Image (cartoon, rainbow over all chains, first blue to last red; front, side, top):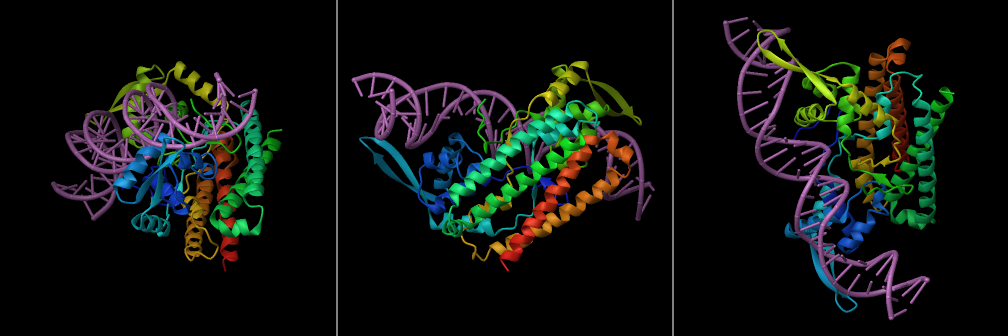
Amino acid sequence: MKQTNEPGGVIIGQRNRLQYIILGLLSQRAQTGYDLTRAFDHEIGEFWQASHSQIYPLLQRLETGGDITHEDLITGEKLAKKQYELTPQGRTKLNAWISEPSPELTATKDDFILKLYFIKSADDPRLAPMIAEQLQLHRDQVEHLQARRQTVFPTDDAIQAAYGHYLILEHAIERETHYVAWLERQAATNH
Amino acid sequence: MKQTNEPGGVIIGQRNRLQYIILGLLSQRAQTGYDLTRAFDHEIGEFWQASHSQIYPLLQRLETGGDITHEDLITGEKLAKKQYELTPQGRTKLNAWISEPSPELTATKDDFILKLYFIKSADDPRLAPMIAEQLQLHRDQVEHLQARRQTVFPTDDAIQAAYGHYLILEHAIERETHYVAWLERQAATNH
DNA sequence: TTAAAACATGTAAATATAAACATGTTTAAA
DNA sequence: TTTAAACATGTTTATATTTACATGTTTTAA
């Protein structure tokens, strides 16, 4: 497995992290493929995205591999659902993954950053509008994340019940706030 | 093209950004596939990664599409090189991409963050070692980035000649520095 | 002088991800 | 009551990315 491990080395390739996200989501409660798909629009969508066309086949693979099992449920007259849950093996696999080191930095793949790389001069007329656009984008993101903190973690109990989630939300708010501050400084520099 | 554009929506899919990186690198000077491959180990490797098996076919596609052309060079007796350069069409395409809005936030896909999501309790014994590991990783990264700033941008002239690159290096240093500060605070909280 | 490292360019296979195709049921609101 | 939105589960196709396979030359250091 080729990896860049020198400082500054960054890894991009995925070694099927989605399977662990699914195991992790199922560890919280039994869910259908549809439920999992929606989770990527809410919660986890802040950090990862996947569509149902990736999720349904993966659920089949995980079940074949013995990490999850399903129970057939019927809603109304005949709407079939498959509710998946972790097997002990799946739970062990999830915990092994969490406990395993995460020694790789992630490449950011930010379009704006990439474009900026090819802006050679501080006088480039494209620079100011690019910064202004990102400023809007990241200010909106800060607001969005703060609103989420309010709704998802209104009480101290809510924080204690999903502490890791709380931490990454806090982290994301700080990261975005600093991003905005940096953009503001650049906007000021480029008058 | 499906995109999540609500605030907090994040995009993961790539619409062949690598082609623009190649165009951008070639806009600086004519280069071979090998040169471009190495560029991902140095410069641009901080932000994107690609291996030669992705680069060589893409160079062929870009040439077929009329964005680049190549000249055959011989080193020594018979070592054949293809030195690629932008066509006016390729340059136009690059500039169009840079000028185009970048309205999407990028998902971070950080393993540590992902694992943190599944840590439910502040008392989870895995939390402290996870934070300690990341602290090491990001402290090293800060050092690495600062060293790069020293070597790549020793003078004000160097900064003026590659201003965008300088900006993103500054940005990366700030981001990593704040990341370290955040991790330190979490480490302190979890005594 | 010889061997290793760096230079140089490809292809093939496997997997990951995204977008589109495909079908049907249930619920809630108009 | 009818229709749109949400629920529910798949497959297919295209593209992106990684890893491995494959081959040969030139330079540098031992």
